Image (cartoon, rainbow, N blue to C red; front, side):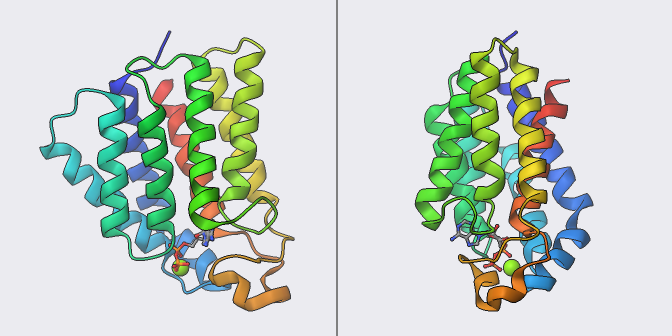
Length: 207
Ligand code: ADP
Ligand code: MG
């Protein structure tokens, strides 16, 4: 079965809930290698997104993604606002009214590309790209092998979780954590971890 606007709205509500529940954990991760505001940024951003969506009349997935994008870009001060905002903008451009497994994979790939373009980062630089890029690859592989929508999202979520875990030994070469150089190794990247929560919310919304 294809996924539509209801799924996108549920995904967003669960992503907002995750940002709230993991607020302190994300603050602590960012305190170790950044400035300690990531949990605050994400929670504030998604709280505002929920507020905007309540008052907006949304008819299709693209419109929901666009509302999320513009809200995150305008309300989140940190680097993650424009980066995630760009991911949602690209998903908005890619989204169809009814999303089939291949459409979901294309959407996640578009998000990953958008983040890489906006942040000029590639994999291995200890950023959220290390969650999104493997998620996009896993989603494409799952769709190609005939997985249904839930299967595609589960593959993406698992790859993002593994990808976030893989940032631990990395030395950051992009973003605030890069100021620490070698000392950034041994910690998880907060943006990769929060991205894995966002993709996990996409799975739960489809259950
Ligand atoms: P700030 O770094 O401005 O305080 P946040 O703390 O909200 O913003 O977000 C930090 C996260 O943003 C990092 O953990 C990383 O995942 C991501 N990030 C930072 N710079 C880049 C970049 N150039 N490309 C991709 N992701 C980045
Ligand atoms: Mg920060």
